[in-house]
Structure formats: C-alpha cells, structure tokens
Length: 60
Image (cartoon, rainbow, N blue to C red; front, side, top):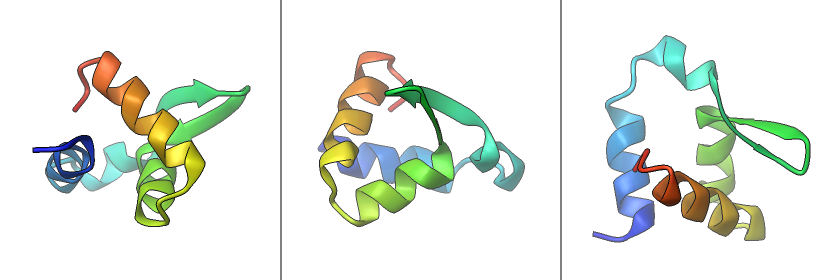
C-alpha cells in the first residue's frame, strides 16, 4: 500500500471534528487533515511533502 492509500485509509476513519485539527506546519503554514486531503486529491507538489512528513511521523 502506498502513502496515498494509507493516508486515505486513516483519513476516512477519522472522526469528523478531528479533520479540522492541525497536523503539520510547513513553511509556517498550518496543515489540517482537510487541507492535506485537498492537496493530495490535487496531486500537488505540496502533497508529496505532506505524505512524506506524515509517513515519517508514523501518522499514516
């Protein structure tokens, strides 16, 4: 399972209120679960950074 699939598995099992929580700060910008999902859905350059950091933190 790749990082993207692992992210979606965790995201889909999160309670709705936790999706608004900040999980990362990248370039002084807070990243919530929802923002991460939008970036990953769009397959942006930032999404690769987000996935790498979430993997390193063992969140996914």
